[in-house]
Image (cartoon, rainbow, N blue to C red; front, side):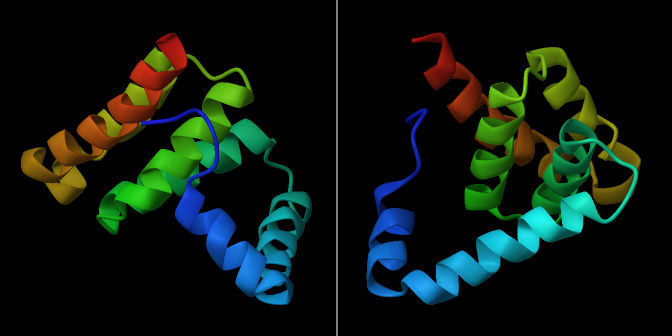
Length: 107
């Protein structure tokens, strides 16, 4: 796993720059329209990504959270909080995906 943006995302961005720019702009706009700071917003999005079983999104939000200064404990706690809602196996999958990125940042 890598600290950098996945090559697949960069390939799609190269072939469809307007589309990716629109998606990125929407993400930034939604974060600016309310009172939550970026870290809190990404913690919420991380929880949604785990719930949706989206490994790529978990990787992305974990990467963003680490860059924003979130601790490993905060990231893991945000996922563990989902246990009663989505179940232990799904939480374990989410922790595995988050750890992929956390471990890469330690290297």
